[in-house]
Image (cartoon, rainbow, N blue to C red):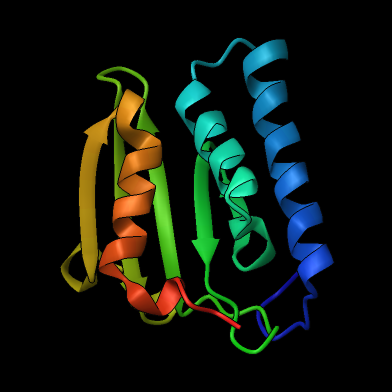
Length: 135
């Protein structure tokens, strides 16, 4: 999908299942140490967030965007990176176009230990209320 495309709740859910399969393959078949990313994707699905948020991947990163009226919109995007070497998960959130996404334009950032990834995502939601009550 590309920015501006219509996306239904079913398509959102299906895309999260694809993301989960992507991380399963990287971990189970290729041996990458990305379990915290898989834990987070499972958490997003279990909490029902997969019906509201658009997910994608870039290399090993997880990207989560907030659709606008069932339209894919990348202007509000959370990037989640896992540094396997030091076992730290980095969250960076921007409210701007992709072209303007630079360190100096980040709206919210957070780092946590790999074991805290789900709690860190929930903390992000508590800090960014416009992501929570979508109807």
